Amino acid sequence: LFACVQCIDTIEKDKPVVLSYIPTSGIDRKERQDTLLNGYHFTCQCVACSGVETNPLATKWEKTLKLPEGNNVNITRQMQYSCNESLINIQQLDEKLSSDGDENNNERDELIAGCIMMIRMSMNGIKNQDISPHHEVSIEAHRLLAAALSLSGNTAEALREHQHFFDAIAPVSPLIDPVVIAAQRVEYARDLWRNG
Image (tube, rainbow, N blue to C red; front, side, top):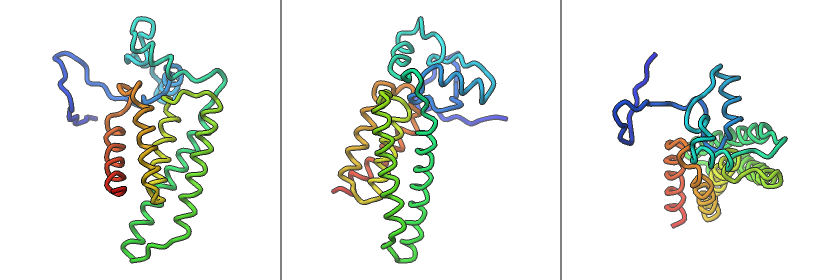
């Protein structure tokens, strides 16, 4: 087993090249460690998972991302996964419709409206549970809502959600996968272009 890695930054000599097994964006240390231990059977020693007591940056992340006691975000994640799958299906439907020359589809519009409603409900739930705006489920809600609004043709509102996404990741940006940030920037640029 091997991997080809293309670096986007300089790596100092003798520094390790590491890869995250799971998204590190907005998951607190305990949740991240439990997921890695239960799913991959090891205890992670990265800067975000270890050294919280001695690393000021890790301590800041831990305080920012910690879920309030008793909260379980798995239902929200499942709902977000379902919306993401629906949005992917809608994009595929759009490609098919444009190749067929048919651009009016009620099923598409209903799917998008349903996703927007579900995402907004999840955002209310996230807010009511006092989950950090920098937690992964909060960030994902903004990403999904921006995508759904863009598909609905409401690019002005989609642009606002893109901005909420970028605001939410700012304090935890070292934990965010750079590919996720780059992809969101592409979507933001596309919506800026569509909005004129």
